[in-house]
Image 1: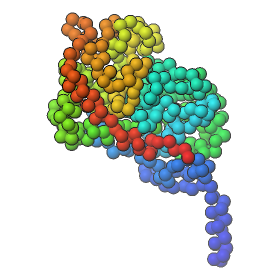
Image 2: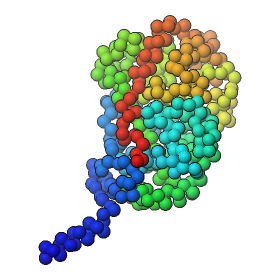
Image 3: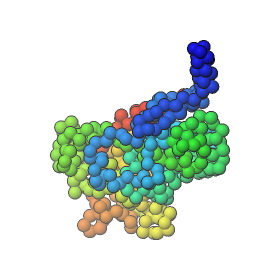
Image 4: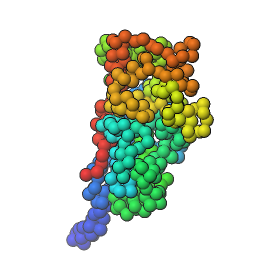
Length: 386
C-alpha cells in the first residue's frame, strides 16, 4: 500500500512537473511554468504593484482624484507583472530589436538620453521620449506630447503599430505572442485564461505603467516628515540644504508660478500648455490633433519627478541641462499667440523673472531633490528577461 501510494505521488509529480501553482496575497493565484522560469527572472510571489505603501499626501485629495485608471482595469500584481514582461519584450517589434523599454529606460526615469529615439528599422521617432514616472496621475488621462491618445490603454498600442517605432500589426502581434510558450501562464494569471488579445496586452501594459509611482525621493522624505499637514512651500525641510530650501521656496512662490503647472504632489498638470519655446508655431502639438488653432503649440505637461535623469528636455529635446531649462523660464519665454497666461506679465508680454545666479542654482538644486533613485533601481520595474 505504501509503495502504491508513493508511486502515485511520483507519477503525479512527474505529470505536473512543468506547472507549479502558488497562492498569493489577496487570493491571487500564480502559475509558474517551466517555459517562464527558463526565460524570465520572476519571484515565486509576485511583486507588490497593486498596493504599494504610499505616503499619506499621495492618497488624499486632490491626488486621489487625479488617478486616470478606468474601472475595468485596476492594477493587479499579476496584471502588472505581465505588463512588465511585455514592456521589456523585443518580440513586440517587427524585427525583435526594440521594446517599450528601448525608449523608456528604467534607470533614466523611463525616458531616453537621446533627442529622438531609434525605432525597429533605425528610424527616428518624431519627438523626444518623455519619462513615464507618475503617468497614473495625469488628470485628463490623455497621453503623448500632443495628447492624441484619450487613455493610457489606447496609448500603449500606438507605438507597437507605428511604422517607425515597432512596426507590428495587432493581429500579427497576437499570433506572434501566442507562439511564445512563456505567455500562456502569464496571461492566465492576469486574466483568467491564456487567450492573448490586443485588449489584454494594452491593459497589462497600462497596469505596469500606472504602477510606476515616485514616492521615495529626498523631497518625498522631507514632505512626509516636516510638512505633513501644510503646503510644501510654507516650511523648510530639515533634510534639505539651505540652497534646496531656497529653491523650493522659489518653486512654490507666486512670483515664479512653477507650481501652476507642476504644483501638486505628483508635479503634473491637468491640461496641455504652451510654454513659450517658440514665437511662431513650429510643431502644432495638440492643435494638429484637434484642428483648433488656439491649441497650436500646446503640449502635455509631464511630471517633473526624476527630471534630473530625463534629459534632454521638452518635446523636441532642445535643452540638455536643467540650467538651460531654468534659464528659459527666467529669460527665454517667447511671445507665442497661445502662450500660457502664467508665463505672461501684467501687460500680456512674456514675463522676465530676472533671477540671480544664486536663485537659478537654487531652483536646479530643488529640482534634483525630486530624483527617486530607489524607483529607478527597483527590481520590480527592471528587465525580467534572463
